[in-house]
Image 1 (cartoon, rainbow, N blue to C red):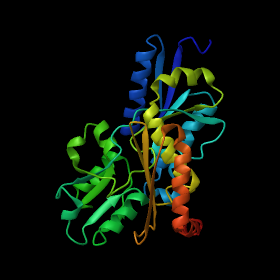
Image 2: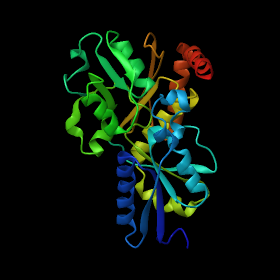
Image 3: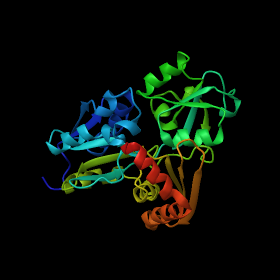
Length: 316
């Protein structure tokens, strides 16, 4: 079979969570539309990230825990491609793997979910807010020091159940996940980037393959979004330059309008006591250079000190 021919069978490795299955099924549907004669199948898997629910990601190895088993399926040939939330894909992804397509982004914002208020500003002092990321936690602590921010793990349904039984007054989740699962009615408000700057790649799906599968890369090319790819490359370049992981309160968010790529990023102390911000404009063809430049601006402001301290505490 040559790369110019249609594939006969494609197997998609995916986590077994409801959101991951929606994402994989979305790619499956797109591929079936592109290649009607191709059998597109899902290989459902449970990852270590799904199994460890009693500790925060920053303490158990990071978001890479969500993709290792899927990569094993690519290595041994059980799957041809893996579908990920792009923000879960390590920025230092290396051979033999390749991030071959970044799909059009859904809503990139964070969302407030609560049964009592429409805005974080309306919560009383000492109200408990749940979040799964240090990025959100640091920004919440900086803006709302009167609130109590606590970790929140589990899949989307588990997190909502914890809110509904009263463990939290509010929780902050990615808007895209709620919308994809038909739960947009749970969103009380979306948080603007000025309040909660999104994670690199948030809202986008990334497709991972073995780097030597040129035939597969060709078949998947129609799924890629040029505009989302430019934004994601800039965002991920910030994270790569700063050694970004879920041990670091790091955010990077780019928007593209009329060939102007506007990138904002921040690094923060986990307690929100210090938040460093930088932004810049560039052209989409210079996305990675733009991200590297913004990262250097943050380092010049003192981000290196914050990163070094967080690295020491995570190694302890």
